[in-house]
Image 1 (cartoon, rainbow, N blue to C red):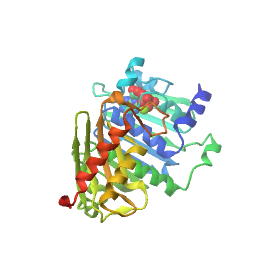
Image 2: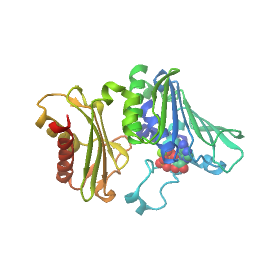
Image 3: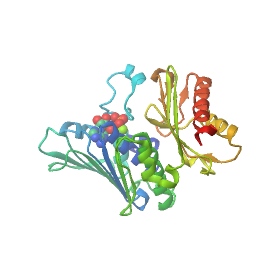
Length: 323
Ligand code: ADP
Ligand code: MG
């Protein structure tokens, strides 16, 4: 139903960066280890995500543009055990409802792939096609049929920056995946996908940052924290440099930010925010990730324990003997 999809698109698709988020998370869920993202005009005129993941057969390609056609949750109990980034099954139909959408996909055991074109929610064309294994999704003229939403977009530079910032964080959360971002025909991000967070940081920010990194390592019974924080030489005036990853998802969390700030400033009485990437692994049952698709704030069962763990991990990493 085109109308339902258009309404749902308001929830899922706020701007080009939200489209990129949904598409790239699908590529990750499809076990890709190479993901290439191309955008033009901040993603407003053109976005294309190409992956080398498992692809879809003809039947699943037809299904995936229909509402709630997720292949990822079999039953309600699964909600507690979500291992994939997506599970709602509404991203693709929502995106296809408000753009000119083209999907091309092939699983490894098929000779031919499938191409499907959808124009503002109406399927135009379904054909067999010769193509690589994996999936390519192209989204053009976002919001061409919803002018009211188009008005809310910022400048193309701002929209491109939002995509860029998101891909950086994602690359840190999945260092085993080789990411490429091409913005207006210019390569702006490339990571090696060699499973080294350090190398991913160096590829993106260069030696100026990577030479300042201090490793974070903390393990207790059921909290494991790894990552990097910079020495005091490098700070910023906003949190834009801080990436929090909980069980493989990029999140925001007031508790965790506060623990980082308190630990950092207890030893280094300075204002500003250090560069941080924290990878936190927790028992799945102690986190609530089932929140609104656009909200990354996560709820934790035992906030004070988590606070202490992060505080201790940061303090340990920056104590003077490490500098
Ligand atoms: P969800 O991710 O919540 O399941 P989506 O609308 O994002 O819902 O995707 C619908 C379905 O399409 C997915 O469950 C998956 O089966 C399939 N799919 C989407 N993108 C890809 C991809 N890049 N590679 C393989 N399958 C995909
Ligand atoms: Mg999805």
